[in-house]
Length: 345
Image 1 (cartoon, rainbow, N blue to C red):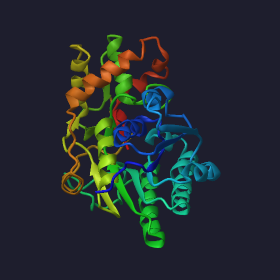
Image 2 (cartoon, rainbow, N blue to C red):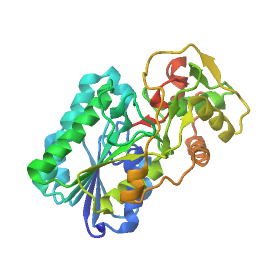
Image 3 (cartoon, rainbow, N blue to C red):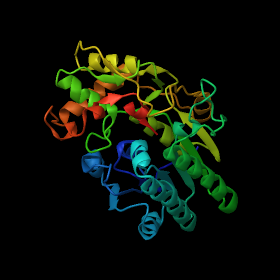
Image 4 (tube, one colour):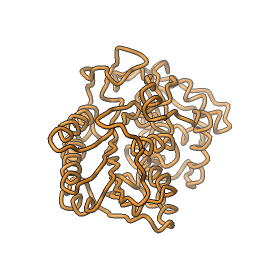
């Protein structure tokens, strides 16, 4: 097992949903320094406010697209967590940006890691690479040929790039394929806000959460705190050149999710249904989590109902109201028939 104590750590996207939780969980391991590289497009200063008080955290405001900034941040780094990304919905609307951030940005990060002599990389990937899977639960050796998203294509490229760098330069890595991530510090502002956030806005206003279709689409939800735990486990493990699904192994339909969220908010509202929209061809997600359990010792610990209650409590603590900034956008933003109910990372 690899110890984190005394090592210099870099987290790209370090002020975001997952990066900030990784930061929190790294601090008790007493690294020499935790460097957070973030452009604060999705990351937020309040996500890392408590961590900064530890005296172990350094923030570099910068972008993975800037190779010079990445190289400077990487200097002296022993352990790298590569989390920087843009949302799947933004990728679809801005494919050139998606390529620049997810492909070129990742190349910059890995190139700098090789130059700096980084000893280990833990990299975020996504269930999106499976597209419409043919087998459930879906194992890591499932083919990626049914992915039809820019996001999934970029994540598949990232995985292939890591394999190439492992062969060419001996770069030690572990890839984690996140399924549907949710939890406190989710994107609660802006054009690409999570559907769970939009639903909470509607429910808080006394409006029924709106689902396009019959609500039968399923997801495999995993809390951001558990995702961070998986990253720490991967960093400390002896495995290398491996890919793991990170999920709960539990299937939840959109209808079940909407009802569970209403319950967590103390509401007796029932979901409202609209005509199905063909915005996402993936009707089902369910991960085979056996390899992560066996190799990393990782099993998700936060159940969906408990996680939703924590999410609601955090969201209400933001001071967001029915007339607040997070309610901007069309009525369609408060609906779901896609995997954006939780980050389909």
